[in-house]
Image 1 (cartoon, rainbow, N blue to C red):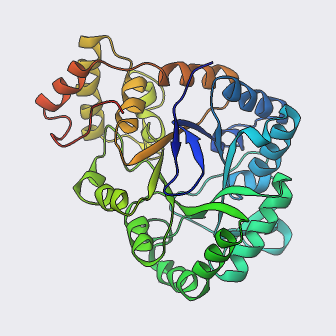
Image 2: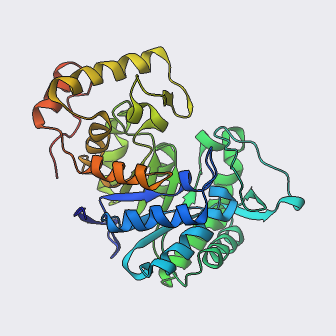
Length: 345
């Protein structure tokens, strides 16, 4: 078993391992995954040292929560792990609601018979939280994240949902945390702007941010991460492979960046990183994980996997640390900015 360091979430008493597991790939993302396969991955991750698991009502329209809760009970490890799930969506029977279209729309394979409706109000958050408890089969949830709030996801409809959370959603988060129903609250998004906006309005503890800080994207270094650190908001970094290109590389089959075919500039940058990897005998995926993990604003790196082989490989990859000379070379070549943190914590 790997010994992944435990790190504190904000100023709370919640601690997560430096590597966590997300359940999107296990929820019917591009391929069907049986419950037995799901449990095998959770068990392998736990035995490999992972103590933090993330899910959401959106993932498989309830399947991720339903499977995860049952797996943790079957494995007898619920009290040994931290669970995060999300609010902002309420699931309703597929026969009673229209499907919503989004920028990052996902066609789940064999989902549960529900569809998601957006709701960032007090009542919506409370219903979503209670529904999640029922699907997970747990009496408490460690971390509750507001899912996909902001311009990047909602576009022209973003203002509607900002009004909802400001009018009453924040009150629900405060009540759930204050009463001990949850231990930490935050956001689960694909942008940093909404996290900073919320942190200035309401005291959040953390934010799960996907794909915004990677070997290919360091925009948060400009200001956002520094402000989040100052406010004691822990970053839970997901999407560190930018949906595939930083795991498979330019010679693999996963040449996607943010779920789209990688552009020529992106491919050229990855090729430049690969050349330095070859020089120092570094695995590209290891570099992608380690780079994000070294930022002091980042508390955990959340990885995904669709099978036991993949989670075993990811955990082994996460345990490999490129030499400091590798990072210096990337900076010297202008591939990474000079202010990017590259000293292990």
